[in-house]
Image 1 (cartoon, rainbow, N blue to C red):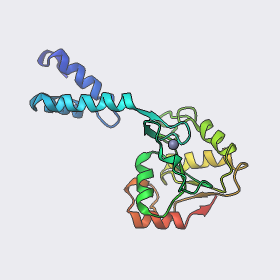
Image 2 (cartoon, rainbow, N blue to C red; image 1 turned 180 degrees about the horizontal axis):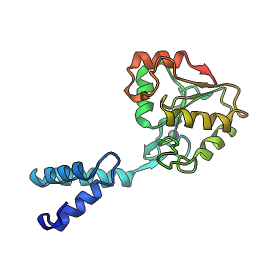
Image 3 (cartoon, helix red, strand yellow; image 1 turned 120 degrees about the vertical axis):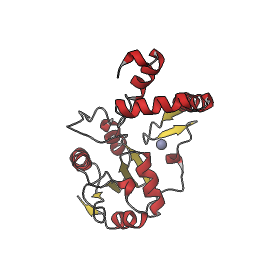
Image 4 (cartoon, rainbow, N blue to C red; image 1 turned 120 degrees about the horizontal axis):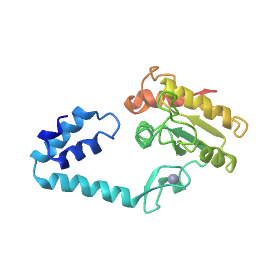
Length: 200
Ligand SMILES: [Zn+2]
């Protein structure tokens, strides 16, 4: 981008936006110019929601999900305490909830292991998950990461680490096409892939 044509403030905004995943310099420039063109109330609204969310939302020390006011849904006693489903993120959790096939506990990894992107077990706090499993008495752990190469790699890695700490470890896969993502799978297919889960 030719900086001579853009105010420094806009250049800085483009640089900030392009730090987001999936947003290259071109998209960042388009978004920045869009915001400049629209009434300033839109920019204020976005900035305020961002600051509010970062200030008020924390990570649950038990399930690693994002939570507000420490009122995490993992504290809900009506849910089965003996089964744990490991998912990549909250969007996958919501997809599984919408399938209506599951009423146990969740553990949110907040990502997947990835050699290509340099995401390691420390980045996903996998030790935290292992500690949780060692200090609980789950009868089953379902590994519900995507059937992509990173999702499979993550599931295999976790399986290796926890196999001596739980009597049954299962994997969803049947029904979800290889290479697809849990959150893009329709709820009937997802329900079937949960009910047809296979022992690892
Ligand atoms: Zn929680």
